[in-house]
Image 1 (cartoon, rainbow, N blue to C red):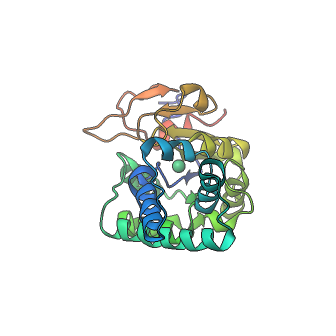
Image 2: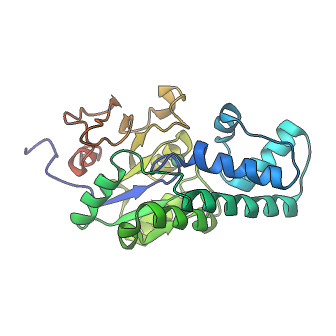
Image 3: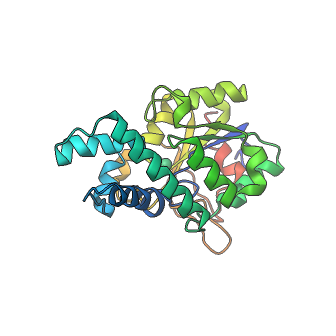
Length: 257
Ligand SMILES: [Mg+2]
C-alpha cells in the first residue's frame, strides 16, 4: 500500500523490558522486594498501590532508599541498600526461573517478525543485567542472539527518564534516532526515548494503565498491548490498526516523514 508506510519497516526496534515484555513489575519485582524485606527482618510490605506510586523512582536501590527516607523516615545507608538489592535480585531470578512471568500479547510475534526481517533489536532498561538476562533466557531463548545489544541499569550514569540509555543503544547500533522505534510502557520510559529523539509506541501495562492518558501525550501511539490473533490490541491514541496486531509497518508509520 504505497503512501501508507505499511510496506516499510523501521531500521531497528528498541525494547524496554519491565512492563513491556512481561508484567514483571507488579508480579515479579514487587514480590521480590517484599521477600527481601521479610528476610531482612523489615516489616515493610509494598502493596499494589504503594508499588505503583514508587515506580516513579527508577532503580531498585533508589526506590528502596526513597521509601526508607520519605515514607518510613529512616536512612538505611548504602551498605544495607546494596545487600537488600542483592537479596531482591536473587528472589526475582527465582520467580522468573519458576515460570511465574509470561510474555505479554504480541511481543513474541513482533520480535520474531523483526528478526525474520533482519532488523537489529536492542534492550534499553533500567533493570540490572542479571534480571534482564534471566528473563530473556526464560521467555525468549531463541531470540537472545537478536537481542545482543542490551543497555542495562549498570551501563548508564543516569537512568530513565534520562535519555542516556537510548543514546547509548543508538551508538551501539550505529543508527540515528529518526530511523528507529522504541516500545515502552511507562511515562519515565517514554520521556527517556523521546528525549533521545526516538518515536515511541507505548503499551499500557498493569503498572502504568492507571496513569492519565496525558502522561503519554508524547507517544506516537498508545495501545493496550501489541495484539495477537485472538487478542486484538486497542489503539487509544495514534494511527488506526485494523487487524489489532501491531506490525513493523504500523511502527514505521510512527517515524517522522
Ligand atoms: Mg517499563
